[in-house]
Image (cartoon, rainbow, N blue to C red; front, side):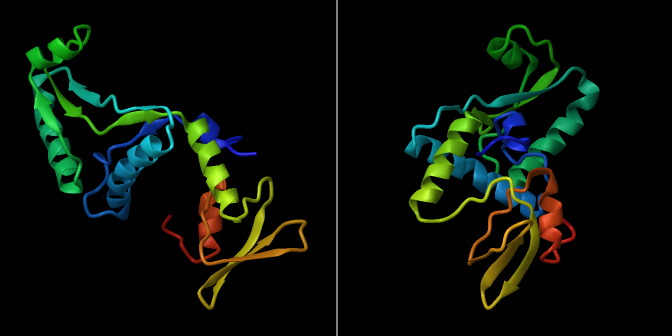
Length: 182
């Protein structure tokens, strides 16, 4: 079944994309994925909380780092970023003692198991397959399709789309297609 490995250890955070290099695909996909995750959660009534987060700094000497983080997030397309004063931080979170903070309103949390359950349902509903507890031993691309081979199975899967959900082994699966800078 789903969620028995890395996914079950998830922090359930919906990341904003603030930390990644602004020229990276990871930044672009994280910001886009953030928006899509909230849309998906609303559409399918998956419990989530768009609670935001504060990145706090205790000393004035760290303020430039906070500004750099805000600039990077803005370049990535993260919306609503705001630097808060000490008084604004205290007003929002009275127990936090900080010189300043960066408010990141797009960060949130989601019920990852409900999310995985809905994804499984939608995948099987569309007559697609999910293969659990099976090692992928080969992955090639031929004529616009992917061909997958599996350990201990006399079966090959053919698909236009493959979602690499191999957890800790996702880099090994990617390498099968020549993606070495995963």
